[in-house]
Image (cartoon, rainbow, N blue to C red):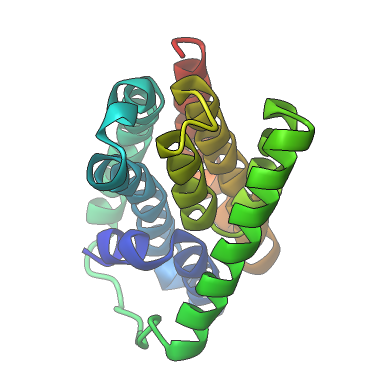
Amino acid sequence: MLGFLGGLVSSTATTLVYARHSKLNDGMLRLSAVVILIASQVVLIRLIFISALISPGMLKQLAPVVGLGLLFGLAATLFNWKRLRIAGELPMPETSNPTEIHAALGFGLLFAVVLFCSAWLSDVAGSKGLYIVAIVSGLTDMDAITLSSLRLFNLQKLSSKQASISIALAYIFNMVFKFGVAAFIGGKALARHIAIGFLAIVAGASLGLLFL
């Protein structure tokens, strides 16, 4: 439940919070790894729901990336979940409300900037410009580039393939960024616990790109 809720709000913030917990409390290591893995996969589920609401025509294109990412990641997550259950009851961390007003305002500003840059670069540099924006913005936030890509698709400024690739690239590089955050804050122990899971999810999403 912690991973699911964290993924709904912000998988990056969830990774940061639980990386800290794992560093401060060795007993939280396995739980933190599972929460981070689940939160990262919930992002893929969010992508499908957002696409269904805003641009249903994108569902077919996004399906390979989302489906394979979830399939590959699920196996690694279940492995970590079994290890967590074997370890027995673990302490539960204190959490705070992540939906503060400054976070909402920050996202609004980020979305406006990403939408502007995406539209401008797609006109000036074509799909390559859009992909650069996707990679950079995806490092810290998936929602802005996802919404902007879907909007540009609806306006017929992007093809479904271009929009799907930009969203997939943003997700892959967001995973890379989150792994770096987890390794830097949580240390080598946490990095080892999530490495296989992150690699599996990225491999699945990357393989999905071949079907676009």
